Image (tube, one colour):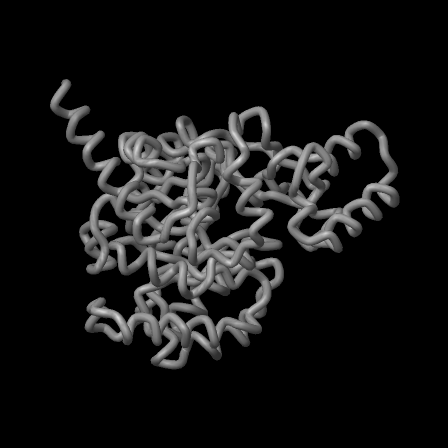
Length: 356
């Protein structure tokens, strides 16, 4: 096993910044741009792999046309994220087993039962001759221990409750979750004489200050999602992106709920998960007692209105974002976002050490 997280991905620089595999948003262009900036970008396959082959092909094309030096191992320097409750394992492995499609990492999240983690981890390792590293997203200490025992991941992505999009309906922020998880997993691996995974923190982190804080908590890398909603490469509706830029004070203006899934018809998620998004008229009407049928009708009308569905006090369309949304101030290329977040974090860590 590599001596450090950046050693495992030799094109990356420290602290390692990754882009969350946001379903429908994190595409090949976004993932490749993050990786070419010294991070690790993830393509968000989610539960639907119908475009996976084409996205991997696009990433290969982007790298081939750049001055970026791809790994000698032949792997693609991007990762792919899967939602285990819906993604088809057999068909996925058929795609990933092709030598030209082998990604640097797969990110596994939200199994219907824990045995899926073992099936996916074993399957990916076999299909890629262990060239692809296994990242597993967890939302609690218990989940982390279960994942380590069952699937022996190379990386644990520890998601705090401040994260945008889907996560545990109940959980802790990274300030307590990351160190407690590291302590518990370290003790388990020591007792079981098994290899300790690397730890990546995610949830509410939008700038270099958040990255520096996560590193001080013990994480070797950090994953950003909401910040990359404002990347030029993201596949995102202009109205959604504008709503992200307008939002502030995310602790009071975002909430984790299942109502957005219900209105969108994305109800396949296992029990215990909810999506954090910007509070809007859809949620307020739900809370005030408007019937689901009426709320759904209004939501569908907002969908038909396009970007206007995100405008004004009566905005209704889902705007998944984390509590760090107020720190997102403008749209920039993913490369610029990645390099600035990383350099700011390094500067803060150096200045902090100098003050001690």
